[in-house]
Image (cartoon, rainbow, N blue to C red; front, side, top):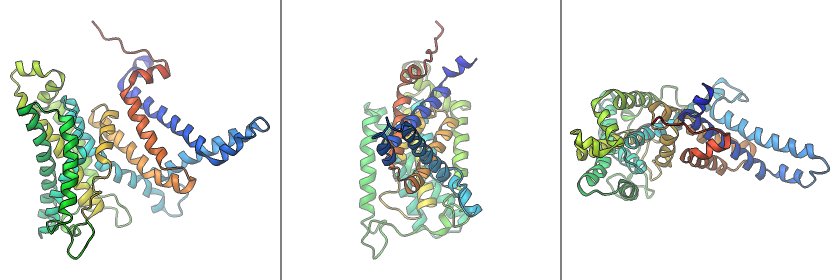
Amino acid sequence: MISKFLRGNIALSVLAVLVSFVVGGILIALSDPTVQSSASYFTARPTDLLSAIWNAVFGAYDALFRGSVFNYQAATTTGMFKPITETLAFATPITMAGLGLAVAFRSGLFNIGGTGQIIFGAIFAGWVGINLDLPWILHFPLAVLAGVFGGALFGSIVGLLKATTGANEVIVTIMFNYIAALLLSYFLKTPFLQAPHNINPISKPILASAKYPAFLGPNFRLHAGVFAMLAAVALVWWLLNRSTLGFQFRALGHNPSAARVAGINIGLNYVLVMAVSGALAGLAGTSQILGTEGSLTTGVAASFGFDAITVALLGRNNPFGVLAAGILFGGLRAGAVTMQASQGVPIDIVFIVQSMIVLFIAAPPLVRSIFRIRAKVEAA
């Protein structure tokens, strides 16, 4: 039973994360000045080096925990529980975009355009949130729907190009990321989005009637978008596993030729897959502009579009796996600041850990060889 579990995808993902943290710990130790100093007289007092390594690695990961889960050193209850809210605030857009990419990956389309689709969703939602003056009960859902539509529109263009011309979606989505970023930069320098009497590329603030409610108060960045994230997880699970459209998506991913013979419209499904994928990334854009940021800037998508690729792969394109991976990456982002501030550990260490996760997820045989796990034998 244990060996069967270890050969499963979930175990391989967990082991990939574990190995990545071990590699991160080694790098933390190597970059620590005290460790470097103790190494110079290792033969005289070897325990000093071992102690320095322990203090460096434990101190760094303890700071990561305090910055992302629970700060037991904080003087107030608010300070103690704020780290987990920061983790969820970061995890919300990463998970939403990751769900979109997971839909595409399950359907055999490698969507690298999460960044562009987040930006387009933020542009559409931001314009509605800035320029329409409506009651919250109308303004907020309209702004969210606009963002979802913007992401879906941008994604569906990729699907249409693939369906009609056979264009490679990897190349097209990468190029569309640049188009979206440059369009946003242009719009933020014109009256279309730029705040009046401002030379900086920034929009006017989003009206309060279009924002996600900040249900924990002004001291927390977490907003009601976290509930939209959980709803999106449930919706994607239902779509992929219980709906006719999801069956067509999965059939497309397994074997497009067989799906065509079975009567599935391949071209239409390419468009629909990319539209759904873009819509979820657009939803991530709304969580940024209508929740966390409050104004459009050129950095509204941050690196969430690329983090979403790793999250989808780490979650094995399973909605609940994507949620777990998104929370993990949200925790890494939230805790990295505390780790650097309290321990002096370079924030780049966190990026290295994320990169190592990608490496090990992309190379399951490497993880199996490290832990001496035999590959699952497929039945003939």
